[in-house]
Image (cartoon, rainbow, N blue to C red; front, top):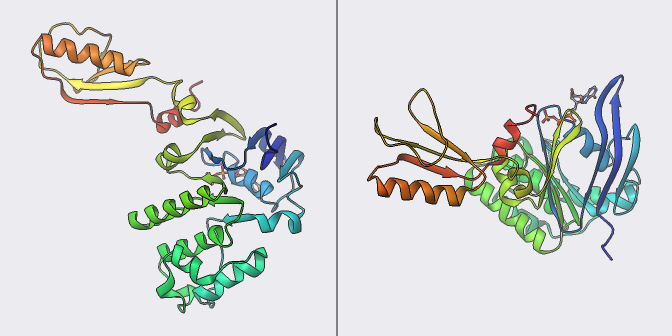
Length: 294
Ligand SMILES: Nc1ncnc2c1ncn2[C@@H]1O[C@H](COP(=O)(O)OP(=O)(O)OP(=O)(O)O)[C@@H](O)[C@H]1O
């Protein structure tokens, strides 16, 4: 029998005055899953997450986290690690004091030196929050997700402002949390981060899901592309293609491997060089750009 979902949202609605921000939204997140809630600006992601995190009441619909009402903070909060866009740590506290505060707020236990090590702030333990760089502050925000290895972790734009080393370290830490069984909910505008890691994606637009599914389910709906250039007066191509104003050819295909094989065979047979050849699967960016087209 499948286990109870960690998050169960059914026909969720939220209105701000007469503005309908979230409309009949339903989705579930299973234990151990990495779910990315993505969408256009103003789509309703933050509003939805605020309800799931217990910060806001729904106008109607049902939200269950670990089978409980998330407004029941005492039952649910200790099991959730929430990395907000800004955690709002007091500027006068030191890094170590801020991390200790996470423990008392969430009622989870952990070793402060362990958490500082994971977020690479050991050397800044005695530094005041006001004296941290933007990236260091972001890593301190991440400590809220790491502290006490919570069962459910929300990451809201976690890598904004982080250099590449810090990003890699953050994702390594997330991988370890997953290996220990944590469920991850990510929101980000860096689509490739979601594309690489998410088990499933909910793509929101105007308060509803435009699409929901695995990355391959989402991208399978749009064609992959092959682009290249050819010298003038080349023989006819073996596949339908369009040509832009700069002379670059574009082939759109749902059979990338087969069509690429056909094209390369044609080029070989005619001793043609396919200059600037690029072939790529559909990216999540393309699915995003298609919002509003259907
Ligand atoms: N407190 C509020 N009062 C009135 N309208 C609000 C309030 N908070 C959000 N909204 C509106 O609700 C809609 C959804 O906002 P929300 O912040 O949930 O979107 P989002 O998907 O997180 O957007 P973004 O990617 O831009 O952060 C937006 O049109 C926003 O202007």
